[in-house]
Every structure is written in structure tokens, then in C-alpha cells.
Image 1 (cartoon, one colour):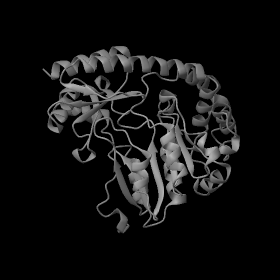
Image 2 (spheres, rainbow, N blue to C red):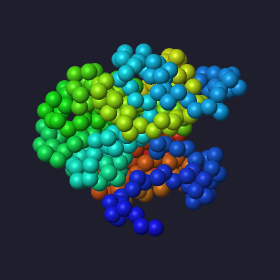
Image 3 (cartoon, rainbow, N blue to C red):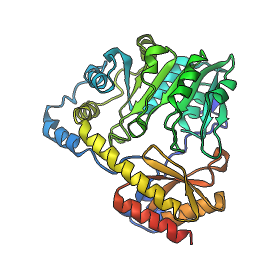
Image 4 (cartoon, rainbow, N blue to C red):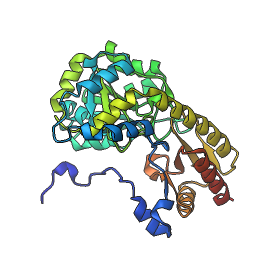
Amino acid sequence: MRIRRTLEGFDAYGWETPSRDIAAEVGLRPEQIVRLDTNTSPYPPLPELRALAKGAQRLEVNQYPDTTYLELREGLSRYCRLGVERFVVTNGADEGLDITVKVLLDNGDEVVVPSPTYSMFAVASELMGARVKRVWRDPEDFAISADKVLHEVGQKTRLVFLCNPNSPTGNATPLSEVEKIAAETKATLVVDEAYHEFGGATSAELTEKYDNVVVCRTFSKAFSMAGVRVGYLIAGKETVEQLNLARPPNSLTVPSLFLAQAALRNLGEMRRNVERISRERSRVFEALSAAGSVSPFPSVTNFVLFRVEGGASKAKALQRALMRKGLVLRAYSESSRVGDCLRLTIGTRAVNSRVVAAIREASR
């Protein structure tokens, strides 16, 4: 099979190793593996699942869903307080990114990406034949300024990606800096707000003022629905019309739409979970700060990134030691500039206490 020249030597997304394979490698049972590397919620969406079970026999899974996803867009309109015409419903946030690059990028275009950040920004862009220009965040606090981003924007720049709050670092960029980027470039600014519900601030209102701003969100994090695969884009009306040019007609399922709509009718449950996770995040941050051999970074998300004393080799060794206890944390390559760090998803109080104790023990 002959593949596209663009894919020769292509740096693809690094898939997470299945829990079953990890268990076999470290001599544990699959049910003993605790995934703390994917930034998902430890709390299943029980009210929504009960509603699905109750109404399952009435779901018309033998039919295609409404291809406009109108009912879900109406729910999003109420949740975000924006017009129903301002939304593109997608199969997770990744499809939102895929749609955006398909609409906006041609071979040879340039994309500016503040890094380290979510690797799919580069992957999706490079699949379209675009050149990715990385703007490195401050190594001390991972801040990024509008001026630093704008300095890299040139005539060929079509897209600027900004994860806000950022993954894997957990920090947020002030909205004044976000708006400055939007105002001072003709390139489209895509703001990934996967962790919006934890951070609170949003660039959604900028989509009313600037037609070059697209906000990307997901139900995977705060709404506890990573396995449901629902996301959405927010943009100005004309921009939405352009994004819909590349949107597949039936990429969401009838059950996934049902669950997302149920979640928007039950915001109290999501907000209580966000509050619980945020309290635990603060507790974990303080515990890691006192551990001695690791240095956590402040976070406004559902995870904490921490630097391991001794560099990248020590970070990988700590990851392996924790994995042997069934605790899976995210590690990074040295080229990412966070190779000496691990990222810990905030779980339940019991899990958090267990992982902090394990980090202390392994670091002695």
C-alpha cells in the first residue's frame, strides 16, 4: 500500500496502552489497574445512565438521528446562553478539531501552537499538510503571552491553537491575552476549552465579537462522558456555516445524543462533581508540595502536573514504580520539554490518598 508523502515519518498520536496489557506487564489483574493518565472523571454519570436504562426501549436506534442535532443544540444554547445557530455538534472534541483543520488548512499552510499542549493540534494539522510552528511556554510557570504567539504568526499562518486551561500543564491564559491574539491576527484562533467547567473562564463570548474565533468543548471531562464521545464547537453564525461544510451527517449515535441531552438537564450533578474534584485537586497539590522529591504546578483543571527531582530518567522510574502498584500516570518525551514531569488525574479521595502515599514511598 502506498501512503501519502505527508505521512512518511509522521509523528502520530501516542495511543494509551490498554489496561489489560499494563496488567499483564506488571503482574496484576486488569481490575487492579487505576487509570490516572487520561484526565477523565472518577464519577460515572449515574442519573443519565438511569434515564437511559429507563428509556432504552423507546430509543429509535434503528433510525439515523436528526442530522442537525437540533435538540442537543437547543440544550447547549440554554447552557451557554448563546443562539442555537452558534453550535456545531461533534463526535468528541477531536472531531471538532478535525472538522476545523479540514475547512481551514491547505497543504503548505502554517499553524502556530503554544507548547507543551495537547498533541492532537499538531497531528490534525500535519495530516492536512500544514507546517506546525511551536511557541514554547515559560519553563517555570508555563505562561504564554499574546505577544510571543503573535511574533510567530506570518502570512502563511491560517490557524492558532490555544488550549485554555492548558493540558498537560493545568494553567490558564488570561482572557485579555486570548482576545489580543484574536484581534491582532487574521488567522483563526481555536480555543480548546476541554477543562472549561473546572477553570470557569471562557472565550465563548469572543465568538460574538470576532469571526476568527472558534471554541472547542467536550462532554468527556466535567460531564463524566469520555466514553460517550460528544463534543461541540462554538463560533459566529457564518463561521458555523463554514465549519458545517466538513461535518459528517451522522457521526453521533442516538444513545450518545440522549445521554448528552440528559446531562444538560442535570447540571447540578456535574457541578457537584466539579466541586468535589477541585477540592481534591487542592488537597493533592498540598500533599505533593510536602512530598519533598516532586514539585507540583498550580492547576485549574482536573489534573496536576508535577516535576520529578532528578530529571526525565527519574520521572520514568517513578512512573514505572507506580505502575507496578497498579497506578498509571502520564509521562512525556524529553522533546516535549516536560519529560521530567508526570501528570496525575484527580480521582476519588481514596485513590488520591493512595497515589500520594505511593509517590512518597517510591521517592525515598
